[in-house]
Image (cartoon, rainbow, N blue to C red):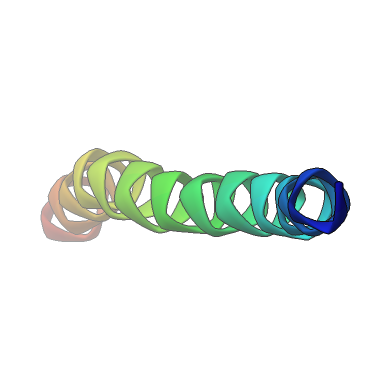
Length: 48
């Protein structure tokens, strides 16, 4: 019976932690992908 409580407790803590980590990594990756074109555009505008 204790095993079920421990499992549910772990799920309750681990799932939000994993989701927040994935969101953080996703934002980092998206940030890099979105920053590159804007930096390129900014560089082109500076040249013009």
